[in-house]
Length: 265
Image (tube, rainbow, N blue to C red; front, side, top):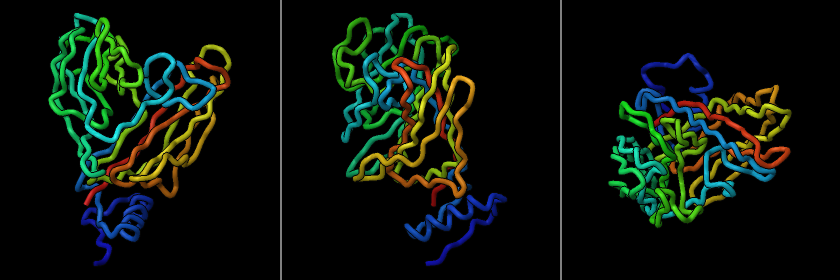
């Protein structure tokens, strides 16, 4: 088997280089046209600690999501009884170490628990697909009891949509068994009104391994941290990827995002 360039040749030589590297390492001919999708994963954490905190909203005192290895993320709820909107939930199921991308539309039932149609091992994004703004915080969690719509066990929460925002802000994602993510770069901003600094780490975990820090940059209240990959960073199928940050003092507000394109055979 030989490397076969796709019929529509990209003008970006680094994409072509990434495709050749994927073939050399995995024997897979991938194209952009087979997937036809770019990907931006962005997030924000208003309580970044002096130790590493994922750029996503989690319960106060929780710095990082607890990753699970089975499909035990089962429920969604709101802290407001007014939220009866339909939302789109994106995530992945897992079987035998293989991730499969799943999209499901769920109608919220306010502060009452609503079961996901398909239990998940990863939840990566929620978008309000109704014509009414969300009112409360939206929680996706493992099976747990609720108090006024809020899960009682912080470690069981895997995603929060902040009240007043109609989509999640989570700079973390997972790749399905079919996809390669060619990451072109990432950025971060320190959103404090007074002088503050943060270090941002891009971390990748391949199947059966631990998270590896690929590169880190600094951001301040007056300077955006940004890195452009050349050659592009290739994230392989069934991998987890996230942005984490550590700040000069606890409770700092940091946002950031990872950008790139998806390739598949």
